[in-house]
Image (cartoon, rainbow, N blue to C red; front, side, top):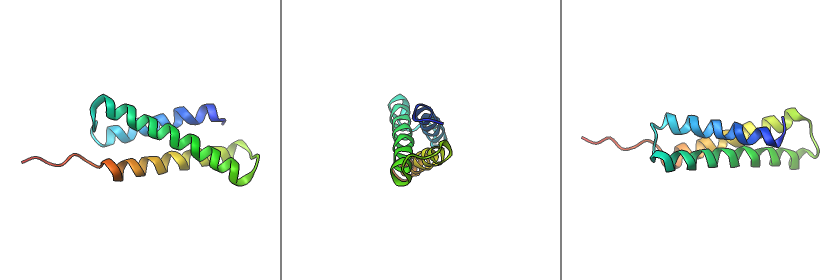
Length: 86
């Protein structure tokens, strides 16, 4: 896995999070969630590379998944579900 694969991986995390929150924010929300997911995944991979030096593809993959998961959790806490009306 390389950094080229980590960005689409993060986009998938963002789309799944957006769908789990029932399409919060419409199209702008979808773009925002995919951006956060892809940046989290890319930065997670970079952090793994910085922490362990030049590493194997497995460590890079674990860092990318950890970064995307952290971005997903941040999105869920920050945006949350829409309030119930009525």
